[in-house]
Length: 268
Image 1 (spheres, helix red, strand yellow):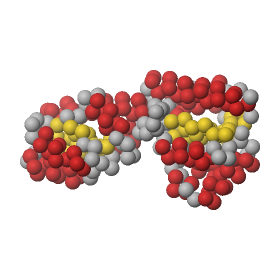
Image 2 (image 1 turned 135 degrees about the vertical axis):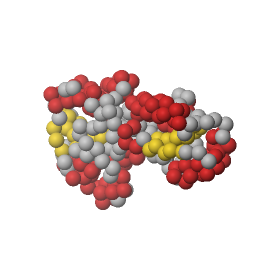
Image 3 (image 1 turned 60 degrees about the vertical axis):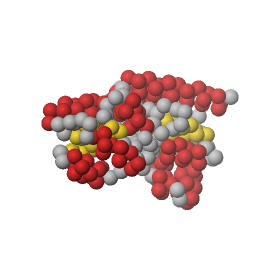
Image 4 (image 1 turned 180 degrees about the vertical axis):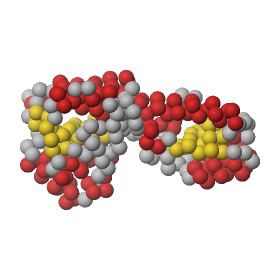
């Protein structure tokens, strides 16, 4: 049996942990397509051995590379070519690691080839499943906000901090549950209430998920309303960087084991 693995969309800490655990414990031929679905389209295929993956579990990102190919993959001719390439390469099973967009792509592939989807996205946007990478990203955010709090309190400043989410509020809501922000703004409708709350304290940490509002306009409103300094901080890609947490490494290993078990069932 020939199994192909790809990482698709945004990278997430723990993707390499899955790859190492899967390749080391799988008794079938394993290959990968470089840079995700784009690699399938371009037929950029490589073998991967137990020796190749030794020690990559502690590395962030994806050693087999990833890319965003969503807009291209929506085209029927691109989908057709990808499926033809998989068949020409004699792939028996495709494993896709990624978020919500990658899940939708896996559903298209599954109509033509055995496909397994593994949730791996810091956005944690797959209903009912914990995503590889989310815990690592949240820990990174906790550390950053804790550090910002000390300087914010020292200068009586307000900080508006934008976290990732890609349309999902899960990261921002989790920050709120962890007691990190004084105020969490999830949409435009929360702004009026936030403007009132800011006045109650000399310094505030305000968390906003990307896309919820224009944070430059928000900072300007806060500054004018309360006549004090407001700083913005976009955490950006640092949330996705660095080594995976122990929880994400364990989760990745569990998903790898589940995939191997499902593949064995396919063979029966």
